[in-house]
Every structure is written in structure tokens, then in C-alpha cells.
Amino acid sequence: MAYWLFKSEPNTWSWSDQIAVGSKGTEWDGVRNYQARNNMDKMKINDLGFFYHSVKERNIVGIVRVIAEAHNDTTTNDSTWRCVDLAYHKSFANPVNLDTIKLTPSLSDMVLVKNSRLSVQPVTEREWNIICDMGQPQ
Image 1 (cartoon, rainbow, N blue to C red):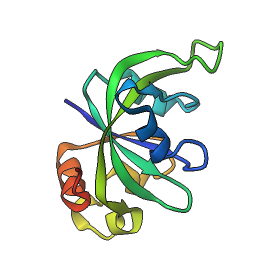
Image 2: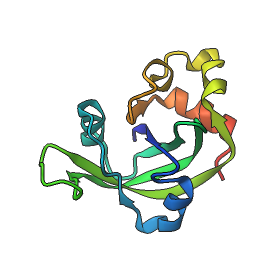
Image 3: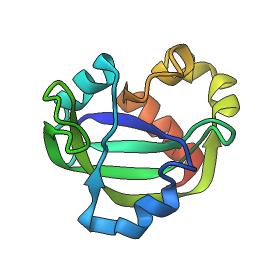
């Protein structure tokens, strides 16, 4: 299993929106960055990802599960762009803020710290475990 982080602006697609679609899931569409697209191409069914509210909140708020591997993004006719489907998995009891992550020495190499603009990024198992300890998924 691999671990990932998916960033979304809450006013575009929020954690509440993700929870509302539940286990049925939805496409993680609209990604127009080659590195993020390439990360989605590597994903397998049942990989897990953090759901991160970007912009003002800057919090990891929950966990999603990959329920469909990379396929054409239905929001465009350009086959360059692909997406995965994600379903709600668990919410965090304690959202984990980016400032807290940056102040945690064991997370200093995390992609979120080094390249916070990348919308879909890998997370190491060690980073995953540290953040789950902080966020207490339920």
C-alpha cells in the first residue's frame, strides 16, 4: 500500500463534500499539473491519502481511499489528464495544521513542507504514521 496527500480548496471541494459522497466516491478531477498527474498514475486501489484543506485553513482533516485507478478525467477531452476516484475513509478528531507539520522535525522532509503547492503528492509510511498519531483518525 502507498500513501498520498490530496489538496483541495474548501470552497471548491471540501471535506464535507467528500463525506457526503461517502463510499460511492468521486473523481479527483481537474488536476492540471504533470507531477500530480504522474502521482495519480502510480496509485492502486485501496491506497490511502490525506485530505488537505489548502489556502486559509491549511489542515489535514481526514483520510480518503482510492477506489478506482487512474483513468481519463471526464472534465476535459484532453487525454493527457487523468484522475483517480476517491471515497471517504475516516475523519481526523484533531485536524493537523501545516504550521504544526513544519515545526515537527521528523516531518521536515515531507513533500508538503518542501513543495506545498503540489496538489497530489506522496507521503512516506513514517510520515503517515506520525500524522495519524497527531490527527487521531476515527
